[in-house]
Amino acid sequence: MKAAPDSSRGGVLLVANYDSNVGFAWWLMESFWVKLAEHYAERNVFLAFPQISRVSESIQSSSINVVEIDFSKTVIGNIAAQLGFLRRHRIRLIYFSDMSTWHWRFVLYRLFGVRLIVVHDHTPGVRTPARNWKAFVKRILHKMPMFTVDGAIGATEYIRQRLVQVSCVPADRCYAAPNGLPNNEIPPRKVQLRQLLEIPEGKKVIVMTGRAHRYKGIGFMLEVINLLPVVYKEKMHFVFIGSGPDLEYFQDMARSLQLQNICTFAGYRSNIVSLLAGADIAVHPSRGEVGYSLSILEYMRAGLPVIVPDNPSVCGATIDGVTGIIYPEGDVPVACEALLTLLSNEQLRWQMGKAARLESLRYSLEETHRKLIQAFSEIEGKMSPGMWN
Image (tube, one colour):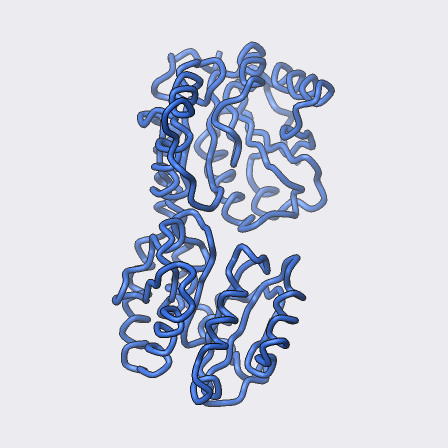
């Protein structure tokens, strides 16, 4: 049982946006919270969930104090509860994820003792850079220290640049902690994917993982497969691993295109890494990520060549012609040509897959953690030594 927090030490508040058992890539956020708790071991570290159902083992075994309080709402009752918590526990630093870099309530937080506010941006997609009067207003807002964040961290370098160009946060307040994967010394056990999903032997497996949402481009991939010559359709099988609100829509679309016999929607699976090891080609036609996605890194780590669009929020980890193929976004015929190229050339698949595995090692979770802690150290270093008093 954890000892009662000593309020004289000053507090750090980590804010979660969802129930304790909900969220995309939850393990990644949990690893950030645990690392920050280790970094601020001399402080009282709290993790606020809007609702608590199940707390992970990694959080339970850490020094983090888990509390149920909603920091996402801005109605008077919620704000009053938030301010009471901040004062009661002498919170000096707040770490938000996917929060605006400017907000009126930040003024109230600071009046109640908060000295540092940091936002970590993991939101996907391409945004239009701010120009003219919009850029002017945003720059003015971010020059008002009571209203704005002290530091903004991007989930990739792409997001860091977006914080500067779109949100207009001053560049010297923006950092990048590029998302990465754990460097597992023991490779995952390969699952016999064809046998598990009853895919005929000899067929090349094209795999995609993620949330079953139209934004992810699964429908686009079905159109690409539909354009393949019949002889190649007979040699391949598309597997989508994941659940989501549009899963039935994609199943119906596959049937309407008469692709149901060469497409499997496998639903949610906990052993994705092992399943990927049984595939041949990966595709990720998403309309937006954070420069790349954890799914793309997992494909690469599994030694798969990856086909992605030239959307800058998606293709950041792919080297065209080396670790995969990049096609013009939305261009079904060109994407089909890319798929044909890999389906028909085993040597090229092997070469690209090997290069992808080597390239994936650059994206390690250990480096992500190092960059995250470095960013916090630099942000805190700009404050006075007495910020924790």
